[in-house]
Image (tube, rainbow, N blue to C red):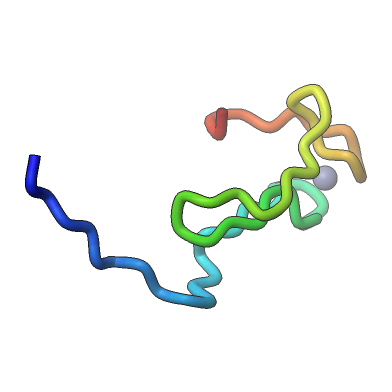
Amino acid sequence: MGYVYVGNVPGHRSENTFCPRCGALLVRRRSWIVLENRISGGKCPECGKEIYGIW
Ligand SMILES: [Zn+2]
């Protein structure tokens, strides 16, 4: 205990996840907070590509 996390950077774009096939925005995040999750059934909602290694 006693660990303090101070790495929160507002607007840090690398937190977002994009589809490797079509580039559609899949998950929009700010640090550990998921603002938007468009993955449906483990697949991209735009092209249907299965998304691995996220959940
Ligand atoms: Zn896609």
